[in-house]
Length: 147
Image 1 (cartoon, rainbow, N blue to C red):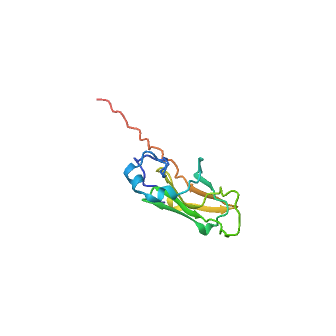
Image 2 (image 1 turned 30 degrees about the horizontal axis):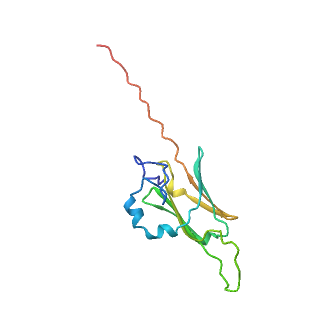
Image 3 (image 1 turned 90 degrees about the vertical axis):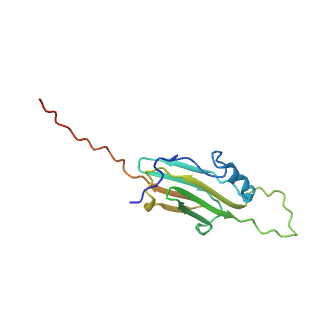
């Protein structure tokens, strides 16, 4: 059972391009940051699992990548393709975002990384990461002797 290796770190903290606690020099050096689109992700924690959901309309599972980095950071990435433009067409609005996207989430220590499941249904990506059972401290009674 491979668990997250984030013990002692800031578990459960979102780490993405909008994370102000990240190294600002790295953010400034990332020239692709201005061209990356933001995708909102819901994170639900139940008694059994951490569940992440992202709306990715128009994308197929082949267009999205989910991976775990450094034994404790889940990384979701992909690209929303732009519709082909015909020079004879007249667009009135072009509001849907296009381009690459990525999000990172630091996973808590109870995340069971060897049992992660991802599913894409009707444009909704769902990533389920089971939680390890809480280890209860072992209590050992100590006999008190008389002198």
